[in-house]
Image 1: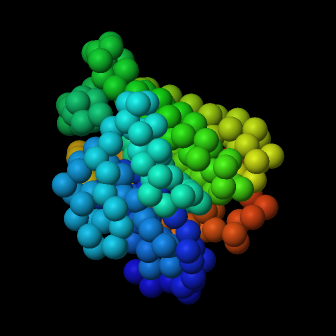
Image 2: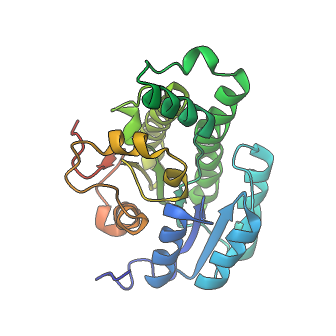
Length: 264
């Protein structure tokens, strides 16, 4: 990845969740390349997080963002080690391969999609526990850490699926729509403490999560797009803009990054 910005995060302490792969890993690499003093690489996959941390000279943490106590301990450890938190990028999230399988099955048979009637409570709750509750946990602890240091920037990762919902994915779409509303509400509240909160809403991105999407579904998701699937690095550029001082007047935004699939 090349970037014209070499020092936007000079001396900053950054925390990136979901950073073992995909968008989060791309963000961790870019923050380090642009001068961050330390990048904390956070992911449930501790081993993969360690590999990314070693690559960027950061610190790895194996954390499930759905666990509020683990998130609280994470930020306490970071503030204890580095004295502050300046940038938080919350890219951790999950999808549902079982629901994707049902969508694929319907497409192959030429039948209507039937996910809702087969959606188990456990799948509904896990999607929201990670995508929504996890965002709440990260926002709460990030704000607690940043208030004492004079402010900072937080970027959450939502989804274009909150607007252009995929048939058969109600739990994912609702979790991401809630992430947008949560982030915007928090943004209005915490700007008074010098903390900016914004959201990026990606369309299809070529990550490991996307690789689990059946090809027929991938084609349908990509119909009408001007540019096709985005790269994780393209999303990182949008995220790092929002996290930087270049976006000092941007608060509570939901930035579409979907290759022209639709506008709002």
